[in-house]
Image (cartoon, rainbow, N blue to C red; front, side, top):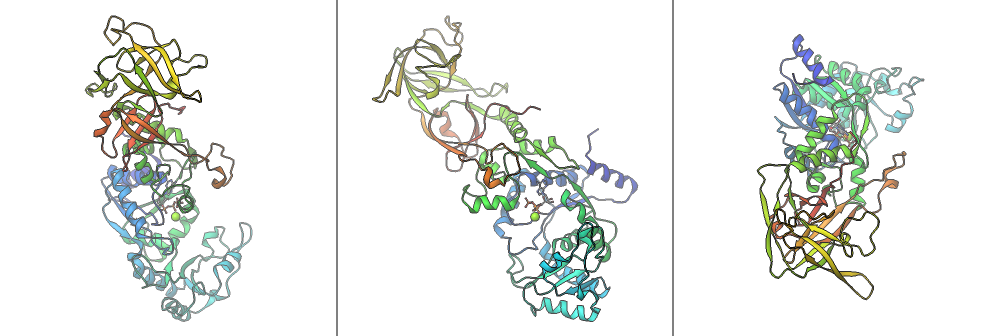
Length: 535
Ligand code: ATP
Ligand code: MG
């Protein structure tokens, strides 16, 4: 039997009791930014339910806030969802229902359940009361239905300034739930909407628009994050008072938080606007497009969502777990290649002609095969793989030492060259005859195996990345937690095999990490080789 989470348990009991037949969910992003990995969790839940119960899932843009929204965001959101491999049944917009929402508001007024209020949003907040004190009723609360209808129409027709009047639900100013103390459901706002243009100068509030959109679409389960738990009574109030039945049902789950990064679109936008990163899809961003440009496989993200599960209390998930999922996927799938990040010349002085050797493509896959690389009399090794003043237990090349060149010979130190500042500019070695795998001298004990690149290596730009935030979670604003250096660029040498790589191809650079070729032809560090996830 497949395991279920608590949301699926609810659905299964409702199906068993006949309370619902076809399950319909929705993913409701506000197009005010790019999707991030938290959204992947919400997508995995909603589309997971669609799949499991043979239901449907709508993509609905919650576009009721025209000053913050844009088509650029609509398009990126669609692209990101497709990248994760999900297919929505209908593409819908809350703004498609503005006419109906207006009519529902009129109905509430007629039923004596809504009134036009003259107070400003600030005054309303001030008079809302506290957890221990009831709110103060607005002087506008007892307006007649006729007056309310006239004023609301006036709001729609542009007779009032922005913020001059609002429409409020008439519920209960003494309710223990502050959200029920006559919440605002419509406001006057002159802003051009990316879909409805200048047709409207009043816009519905989220708490009014969301349940109505869900009801109109026949959503059965409206799944949202925990901070909306206190809004559920209002969700139900709107639903019933607009004449709908028991469905949809709102169910809340815990928001995903990830260490070493931030996840709110508002903050991510700040990083983009202040130039800390190069855009929403910068590889350092926790956005889905950032992760795609970084090289995270979509399957690894879905695997991550699966492993963290669906909980009812908020918690932080370690970035290391996400990386663990990415690394596991890449270990199984990425071709191994040799790339030198900081090249140092090595002359193999007794090698008179180039010879072709072979490197395994992926030792975890039986049929992955191997590819050729030419050992030339001059090669490149990693600067950090040779030391004239080695620390203890240094197993790489040192004066009078020996190392194996990956896939090729054992080489023995002869001498090295330096510039006028004493920096090493080349190291001279000789190879040991018959020391290739299978040869008579292959058994000579050497501790270090170095990756290398031949003299016809390709020049490559390598971008290494670090976390956006430091690792001290002490409640400081993220602006104070920003890592000073999050990107380091190297000019390396890649074995010629990589010349055939296409954009978005992923590799393991042996001993360095996993890298993806980006759109510009540079290589981005996806994740290092070492796993820091402690289970
Ligand atoms: P943000 O605070 O990052 O702007 P949001 O909740 O305002 O996020 P929406 O576009 O309104 O973003 O969210 C679309 C859906 O994704 C909602 O159902 C929301 O609850 C869910 N969601 C957003 N962030 C997370 C998260 N960190 N973990 C899980 N689900 C999330
Ligand atoms: Mg939001």
